[in-house]
Length: 201
Image (tube, rainbow, N blue to C red):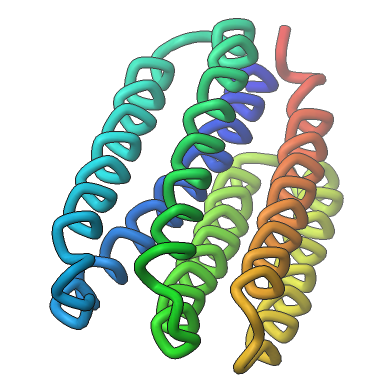
């Protein structure tokens, strides 16, 4: 069970990134028709590159989903590298194609919504897994889930306050929220792991 909880941490981490990638791509494709004529070819190529990177990331996650914790630990470095490449390519799109604030705001809203969905799904998954424990063991997990949900509410409030900000500020807020999600996700699964350890062996 502890091994499984660590796997859930990695899967939640990866799923959150995939949700963001999908949100970025959906937003870019929705706005593709609004791109200036002289930038359409470049926009199309950047979107194709982003899709390719998302697909590679997703393929790596799928390959890892059946492995053990040690393999996930090694794969996470590769996944982080792929995530960073996606972010770099996306920054090029923002800097060259999506310079208008309304376009950036639309992308921001989509990505923020994807992040918040990942928070909720992860908290629900941990809470559901906790039902397998006796009441005494569940208390700490329930507290961790409650904290995760509280952290999600704080992140949501911060993200909703950002209107009309520069992409740099919006992106920094998304990175902060993503980091908070990673921390909350890890803390919750570590609590789950501790609760499960008496039954591990």
